[in-house]
Image (cartoon, rainbow, N blue to C red; front, side, top):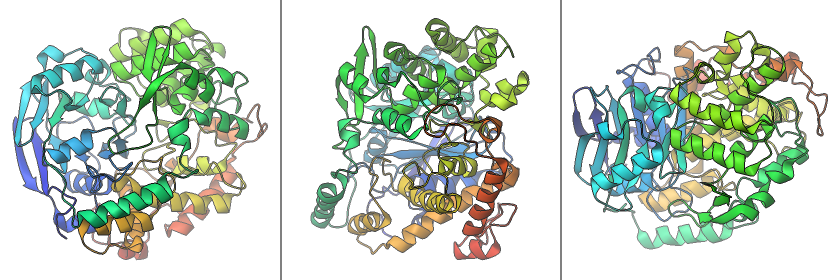
Length: 591
């Protein structure tokens, strides 16, 4: 395969040896894994043993751009990070938008592979072909916003792009994250702790090159065609007009809006957190590279200001904690973004502590709807400065286990659930149970299914979406181009590469990527028993909303998993068959 769309070079960073080198991109993997998630996964599984300790120096972090990243294709600027999660122990992928991915390609690199541990805090400075490790001692303890400013000053280029961690990651909180350009995040799974464990405070990048395509005229014509005739259509324009806060009304109407630690499916005070409330507080919009949607909404309430909050934060840091004060949620969001905490896990863990307090399990001095302590504990978590901060820093699974409240913990494989109630939509429960990284809404999102409790139909929808999203993230597309499909993707890739790419081979690549992730988790010790849901979902009837009284029972789950494994051609133990591995070209994998 030719190197159109690719830069053909990887940065190899060995922090223990204090060395930075380059290697040619593994061209033989491109036609099977393509880029971003898939290619990062292939590099990662080639580099480590599945039993590796995520926080050990020997663990590797792979950051990978996508082939369409850095071009004028809209909503295709995302890049991925793949490693083993310190929060869950699973393989995991996290992706981020903004402009760092394109900037890295303009500097001449498709990705970065990081291993080892620096003897003192450092940051990686990439200025085209001048790459170095620099002291970050003066940045230690700084929040992400200030760290980004310091790294930008160090490279001497206004507008340089950044990845940075805050105090939470320096303290290796397992749900700490990596921030990018202030309000973008490698959010879930503990990406920040991976950098923290390596004494890597961040990366700053400046690039002045360009991405080559085979035929610029045809490439721009196809890009313009799909932008006008598919992207900018009614099915997608909600992202431009409202952004994710529109989901506050949608999920409440559907009865799947988590409230009071997933006790209820409806928030009776949603008007204070919905899209209208965000629009009333909006200062302006912000877009990622090459994106006409500008879904990011800058908001201000009194002196509280943020880009956001996005839906997951409005729900998990708002409704699920019974907080209906938009100013408070903005402050919560900003604290997490600067200190470096995943808002989803942080909000979910706080809501668990609130329920544990109110149920008399343990008094954390955190109660539903109580704003002051809700905001105070975020700093305590990030800095490990109090006993309750240290408790909540472990996340929901470990917090519940410590105090014997497992029936209240809302997580799958250790990852706290997103803001869509599975009792009201079994498809989300199936998606959570089978996701490679734990509970996740970015693998499948069947909330608009005709029948939200038709298990067989929903299993089929979930499998199709997981395969489609595996290749979608590998090509760098944003979730908000909801109508993009492998036919469109193949046409754009063909125009850019100058080689014929078919929808069928992209479909097969998506299933290959999903299956390789499964093989890694199996080798890491996960089994079909881990494809499960929280006790509360299976045992406690949902309160409020359209699906009041529902549970997603163990019998429902068993039926769903049987159907899921059969459809994927996996055994009853969730192991891909030799026939399936051969069909995907994975029969010789050493995992």
